[in-house]
Length: 304
Length: 254
Image (cartoon, rainbow over all chains, first blue to last red; front, side):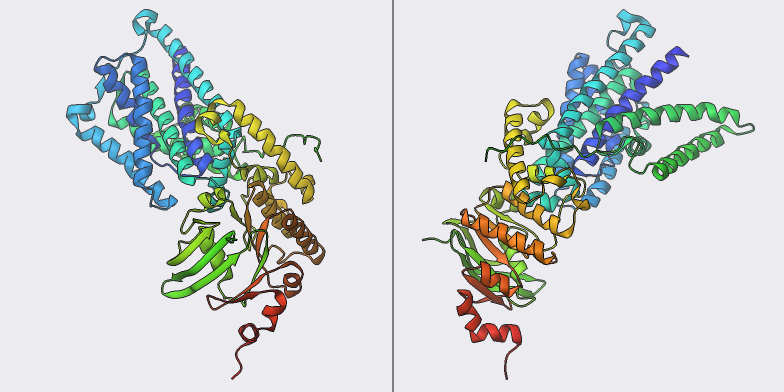
């Protein structure tokens, strides 16, 4: 049971990183990235392959961040001339392309067999239980660190410009903002964070395969950010923890319903997730921790 | 002396409909230029083509002596040309104060790394801009609504925010598209007084307005547009006496 709780909390942290990534791009500059699972996969494979080739785990994670950022830039550059709703469609396609490449380029990714035996840092030294605890602490620390950074960004002049672009990008240009620069940077950073989440996931599971990166993950993360509050990093983190815990809780709840086939249990869990989303949107459409308008500082006495 | 804004032979069409058919306009530095003309003359379209919303199909725009044809809005703002909109626009989830701060230029905090890790230069600049924002808010009597989202403002206050945030960008020339339209008469009068004051302090203004009494009171020179072209330019009296202007407004006599 303890190891199950540790596992769930680690997964919570990884989902929280994905939610922070989505909140940055969606709640920040207002771009809908339906390809989150793709960036998650890119990071997971990048780190798995780098460490598989002999690189230390830290280098693998750095590689995941860098590859994620570069892929994010490529996707935004490729969609520059498209309207924002088309960007959403392209990113959805992007995630599928990544999954299919992972499935078919066997020389690189071992196809549907997946890559196993991914280095688990310090596992030999710490033992299984020790490693799981250590990894939970590490993931939680990384979530806290990135949450702090993004929260600061949110309250900075950069965050203010991002939100202006989200609200009305044309008007933001008339406010003197270079809209494209903000979009590219935010997308690259967001993609890098999603890729880091993928790398953390890969080394936690010691195994990745294309099956791990279904579009359903993206949907769960949208659910997390919507429930937590779009446009507020704290909301994204809280939303992610709640979604994972709720998903796991449905596992137990469905045990209480007698006479169901396993397939029906799975369907029932998804029904519960859908119901929960409808309830949250109905009761708190702005999310549990809604975005708030910062107050102006106290005016300094005028010199005049 | 070179005018602050010079538009020469500006052309623009939408799907073959010629909206601007060779507009010439010169806004002298320090002037309060009025732009009038019947509905559909192309006044707002001219502002849109000059301010970077549309790329003109022909002709040139110059700021001072440097060419500014087809520049994107953010570069024109950096060069000192700032505009407001006929229907007041705003960012629904930003407060009035944030609107003012957003328009402040040269904020090193708009660098990604400075945003993530904080920067002393950004905090200093933020304090400077805040001081300026408070001054402008006091001047325009917006200081009691600074924390409100713009969606919670009256129509007149929205117009004031348009002007206030434009001032935050330290414009050399301000293009105002009917800043008094749809505002109650006493507030409209107040806005007019603000504009006169700003103009006296050296700000060049180009104003689209339909109220001839206001144009007469505020503007010199007055430029008349009709059917996508500049008809004439001069003092209000000269322009009002021009038979072509009367025809443009009242229809041609046959």
